Every structure is written in C-alpha cells, then in structure tokens.
Image 1 (cartoon, rainbow, N blue to C red):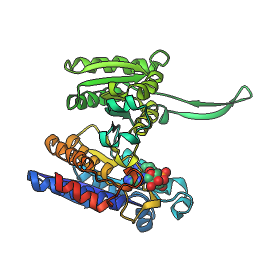
Image 2: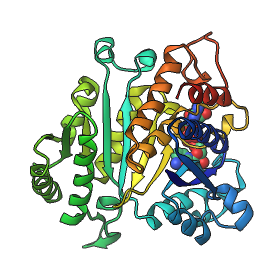
Image 3: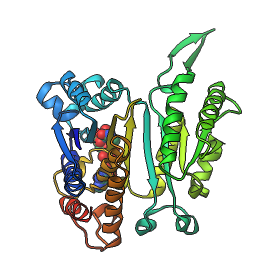
Length: 360
Ligand code: NAD
C-alpha cells in the first residue's frame, strides 16, 4: 500500500533523527511491499527563519492531507537563540501547540519499556529493574486543568487564583475507547488513574471508563489513585500495561515513567485524534548541544515510526519488525553515546539508522 507521511524534521537534531526513521521506513517498504511518500514541511525555528512564524497554514493543510505526521523536534538553545527574543506566541514551541490543536490530537501515548540491555541505566533497585517493565501511558491532552477557565483576582481584599478542571463525558469516552483498543493490541489490561476519593471530575472518569470497559470483556480493568500510582511506578512498574489518565496527572506520571527507563533518546511518543491520524515524535527535544555532530540517538524517532505503523496504519507485523530490529542492534552491543557505558565504543546517528534498517 501507499502511505503519505508529513515529515516535520524541525530544528537541532530533528533533521538527523528523522532521516534515520525515514531510512528504516523505506526498509520496511522494501521488505513488506509498501510505499511511504514523505512530504517535507517546516515548523518551529526553521519556519520562523523562512516564514517569520513557527507554523503556517500551509503546513497545517498539507499535514492534514497526509495519513500521519512524523516529527523530529523543534526549538533551539533558549538562552542564546534569537527565536527566544520573539514574543511567546511567535516562538518555536508555539508551532507545536498550534499543530496539536489544529489536528485535534487529544490522546498522547508514551510507552515506557526497559530494554534488558540498558538495565543499568534504570535508576530503580536492581530487583525491580530485573523484573523489567513495558507500559503505555495514555494521557488526555486537550482538556482538564490546563485548558479550564483561570484567573487571579482580589476577593474580599485577598489575592486569589482560580484554575478550573472540567471534563465532559464525551472527552473521557473517546480516550477511554482509544486506551481499550490499544490494550487489545497489548497485554489486555487497563489501569485508570484518578483522584476519585476527592474530585468530581475523577468520579466521572470512573463512571464513563467503566461503561467503556463493558464493551471489552477480554480486557482487565483496574482503577488506582494517582498518589498510589506515583509510588507504584517506582515500587513495581511491571504491574502496568496500559495506564489511562487525565491531562495533569498524565503530564507528571508520564515523565516519571520516562525517567525510570533511564534514557531520553530511547523514548517514542504519539498524539492521536479521533480517526487513525496521529503525530509521532521522540519524547526528547532538539538537543542543540549535540546538533549537527551525527551523535544523536535516532532510536526514539525510529520507535515513533514503529508506533505510526501500528496505530495509524494497522501494520502490526511491520511495527514488530522495527521494534525487533532495535532490540537486535542493542543485543549485538551497538550503542550511541547517550546509552553507552563509560569506555564502550559508540556508533553515530546515521550508522545506527543503517544498522536498524538492515535488520528490519
Ligand atoms: P532536550 O531533550 O533537547 O535535551 C536534554 C538533554 O538530552 C541534552 O543533553 C541532549 O543532548 C540530550 N538528548 C535529547 N535527545 C537526545 C537524543 N536523541 N540523543 C542523545 N541525547 C539526547 O531538552 P532541552 O535541552 O531542555 O531543550 C532543547 C530545546 O528543545 C528547547 O528549545 C526546547 O524547548 C525544545 N524541546 C522541544 C520538544 C519537542 O519538539 N517536542 C520537546 C522538548 C524540548
């Protein structure tokens, strides 16, 4: 089949890492008989340099015409880059927020998987790391506290700040359905994280998610309070498969889950809308400190491409092939600088892309 992919390479290491993911997708195409057509689009600092703004209508329209978006990262050194002398709405990051909104990407997926070969980078106790973990954090991205009405004003002579946390049943149902669909492709277990002992919004999350769970009898459905989850992630992360949660809890917990894997260069992510469409990007930033040196780790971006194969194109076998190729290169001992132990030989970004593409 033919698939059209919008490629937003962005700034810093973005062009280097996306080029490796394209290399791997082309290898998948050659082995499994697909054609991936890439439309290169500008966003972030590189768009500011050419168009004066971080995101143009043209980029949004062309991205919408594609089947999915593969992104590198945007932004520069926030202390020295001229992009950060602009007003906040014209800076590179505004492009990212703008495209997420324009494409209605409400579900953020961040897998946290501990590669046995990289166990030493895991900051958890050895006996916990030895058990390994493989979870998918699913965070609601467009509602809740970060999007509610907020103001600060003086009430009865006292300065008072108010943030509102609102969710309606439709916003909850659409992401709960995504979580259960994804669980069906994994170990068939969903844990809803909330604060239902205190918050009305959490009680609605429980009610709606329970209704959705009834349509998925094969999936085990559990609930856990957010404070307990923060502890369980470091005590026994192996217990989690799909973790579903609202925007702010997800913001915090997904960073905690990333941290216990030990390496930012290994972590993919996806943001999906109501259709199969999604934007796929590494969890890390544009790493201006190592840009242009061919030393960035392209694996997070390559694994983001694997997520695209699985969740936007339903090509599970091809996604498995990419994930297995990554495991294989790690097993064979190849490392980029960020995941190498002291003194271990390393390979560059482009070489790592070649090695993975060869093993697809
Ligand atoms: P960063 O993630 O870019 O870098 C943090 C550290 O991790 C750096 O030492 C960097 O070298 C390293 N690192 C990151 N990705 C790596 C990779 N693939 N391989 C090897 N090492 C890697 O975070 P930062 O320095 O705080 O931010 C730099 C810029 O990136 C800023 O402008 C920030 O706004 C932007 N940013 C963009 C995104 C995005 O595009 N989604 C996300 C986060 C940060």
